Amino acid sequence: MGEGLTDTPQGVGRGGRAASHVPVLLKEAIDFLAVRRGGTYIDATVGLGGHSYEIAKRLGAPGHLIGLDKDPAALEIARRKLAPQGADWPEITLLQRSFAEIATGEQAAGVDGILADIGVSSLQLDDAARGFSFQADGPLDMRMDPRSERTAEQVVNHLDERQLADVIYEFGEERRSRRIARAICRSRPIRSTAHLADVISAAARPMNRGKDEYDRRIHPATRTFQALRIFVNRELDDLRALLDAAPRILKSGGRVVVISFHSLEDRIVKDGLRDGVRRGDFRVLTKKPLTSSEEESDRNPRARSAKLRAAEKV
Image (tube, rainbow, N blue to C red; front, side):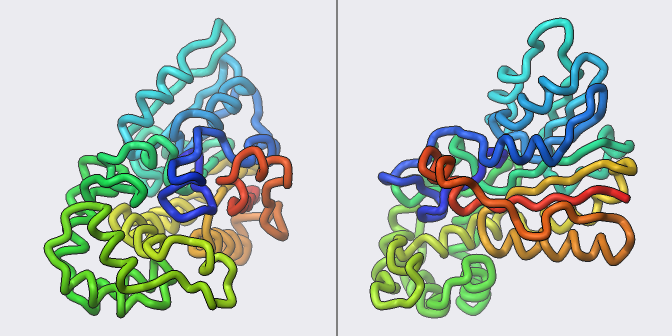
């Protein structure tokens, strides 16, 4: 989170490893936030602190930056990156918290802007022990917050076949979900990412004849791993909660900027902002989602699938 996700197989970067930490659509996100010196801003997915650092530089000493992230390892890195840079540095508050909880506690007061960069971070992808990637063998964990009870192993080994197929189809948009779920249930217990990827690969060969170019070039386990990660971390429910809370905590003229990395997320953001317009809460600033330039996509492959939408509180 905070640094997004490559458009290569969900959970891996090009060349079989996670892409390095590069904030996606950085200039565009900061421009749409229109950071006011002395204001209060929330980076709802602080990640490794790339976007937060640019916000902090513009806030100055009177300002306040609140950073949220489920992942304590990411927060520790962000804490070092956002350490005071001199006398004219804003107050920094970092909280281990889901962005679904954005309207609770300290950050519930009026704020000038909210930024959310949805997705899994390079920090999480690079660590095989976290279980996000099928490119290196590791435990089936996939929790962004290690305090959460539900792991990918529990989902894979304990949901019944129909429930598992529904998860894979709904959150991975995987058309072969029933075949994959059947193969998983027959292969239980599944204890590692490599074991799961092998089972999926045997059940669902690459769609080389498919009309969708994306289907032809991705690993057959890609969509299932995406689905499990989203389900384990309740990512879409959290995103809906964030969009629902944003109008309540933004000041008049305050802005919300969301960067998403796949169609499920972008659809929720689009619909959430549209609902806000109907209620009279928002003015949408992006008629169509902003995407990365060719130069940024070449420099940072994860940016290729990124879409930015923004709105202003009215």
